[in-house]
Image 1: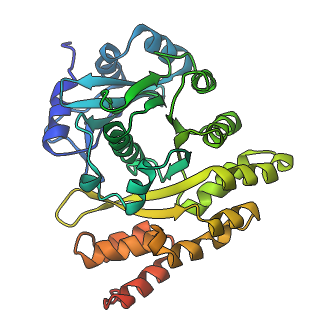
Image 2: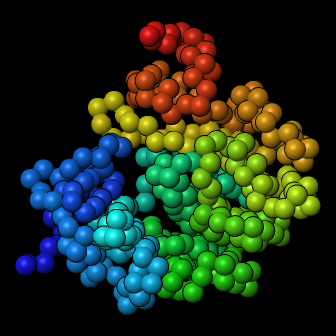
Length: 362
């Protein structure tokens, strides 16, 4: 049987401006376009053996050994000069399956992404802890890449990233950029993070904070004069604060609140929403660490943070609902898609009324 190639499916994904390619046994290849997964037209059903055969040339020897032992492995590779591809080869029902995320080589600008004012503010900060949070596939990595790129263009710094795997490739500009890939440049995420303390970074991107140790090191580096960026999987900005604190045992939680209150700079939470006419657009929630915010965090009253965000737009803060209202009023997204993204649809309806629009009934 002739070996299959990944190339035609990647071409199809690229031509349709899609984000993901999914190969699962007993299914045709599927691409995700404007957030929706759909089969590649005319493609045949694939077996698990065929999927493994497609994926194997994309892996190095270490990654193949990892898959054979652990039954899943994450990896990345360059697709010509057009894109980086982030991949996950995994096992389901005893068969190989493959998920690929396409990351264009050109790093989007703030204007391309519609980033909030807070992103400009963050770029100019000498130190502090910046969290970008949201569900899987909400564009967190892209937002961080744009911010890191802006720092790279405007500040004489050493930027150090720890990624699993490397997604966007940053070239030296005004800054020097060191990108360490777990499994290639360091045997583990924890070791790379501990070593970062000795590698003279001014700006550190730690990717996803996974456990108590990684959070502790990130907080310590933010406290000791570094600008630290990290991601979390939470639905909103206040929840990110609680998620960090809850990782620690009860006897350390008060100390952690004090650490977060002292080092936090900004939390950006985001969701991707289908655009009218095709494509996706990000909606953002922003929490800026003002004195009032720091006090609430120290006192364990994170539940009151949404009120602060709602009433402090001059400080660069905004709720997700206020940004959804903006996107609706500008004709970019539908009310129905906004409701699906919102955890507080009543606030969304009230926000529409305040700008002279009414929520559809029924």
